[in-house]
Every structure is written in structure tokens, then in C-alpha cells.
Image 1: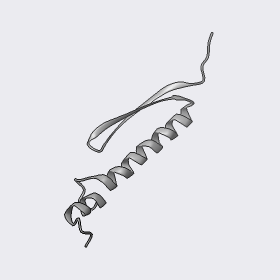
Image 2 (image 1 turned 120 degrees about the horizontal axis):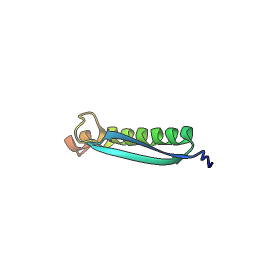
Image 3 (image 1 turned 120 degrees about the vertical axis):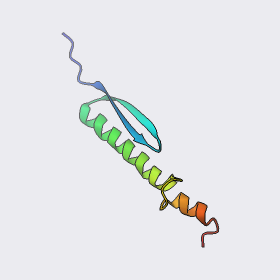
Length: 68
């Protein structure tokens, strides 16, 4: 009987107004840590680039493009 250590792991998270799906292949701990790191980075970018969050740097720039 064959035993495989690695498997596929899939997670979906709703960020930036859209579902993000990540599928990883490998050891469970490595895959889950990697997926969490990716989702954290997407959330960080959403905080910076969101047009819909009033306190995001992009919203501030759009309100006052001169930087004053």
C-alpha cells in the first residue's frame, strides 16, 4: 500500500471584494503557514490600496492629490 506524506490543501478567503483561493501541495504545517502568510499579505495590501476604506493611503491620496 502506498502512503504519501504530502497532500493538497485549499483555503478560500474573501479579501479586496473578491474570493481568493489558494491551493498548496506539501506537508500540512508548511502549506497552512504559507497560505496564512499569503492571505496576510493580501490583507495588508488591501489596507493600503482600498478606495473604500476612508483611512487607507490611497483614499487619502485621492482626497488630496497635492499631498497637503
